[in-house]
Image (cartoon, rainbow, N blue to C red; front, side, top):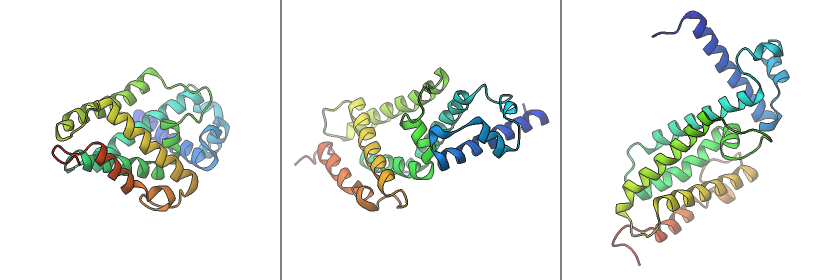
Length: 206
């Protein structure tokens, strides 16, 4: 059923609020988001924001969901046409860093803990864990290519830890450089080579 005019206007306003909140977080830090500053940028009174969100934590929760939805879409788009496990390994590690460079405020909110007291809602956690569980399932499908005793969960969690470590160091030191460049971004090929030795294709173990 199409949205009514009022519903459409509300959805547009919510999107504008989220965009303005992201700008504040990017400029001042994720934890620095304030309803007063957000209202000022939206050219509305602060109490009016509560017609759309119950409070700042509710707003963070919406941004958390937005971040994971965008991450899911980002990775799916990059993975189209992948040629196997090792190719997807490269896609995930490079894709994690490129997502963080493009969306640093959402990356921090989703994958770090920058906001004291913020706990994602059950709905938001279900979204994030759903994405994680699909990763486990995808690796389980591809594991038949590999000579490894690692479980799918161990493989995914190792890749998450490596991706986050590289990305966090890249953002902390050279956020102006693209994926693959700089002190830490340039380590991606080395990391991939090491992981391919730990998890070689069947028949390729040296």
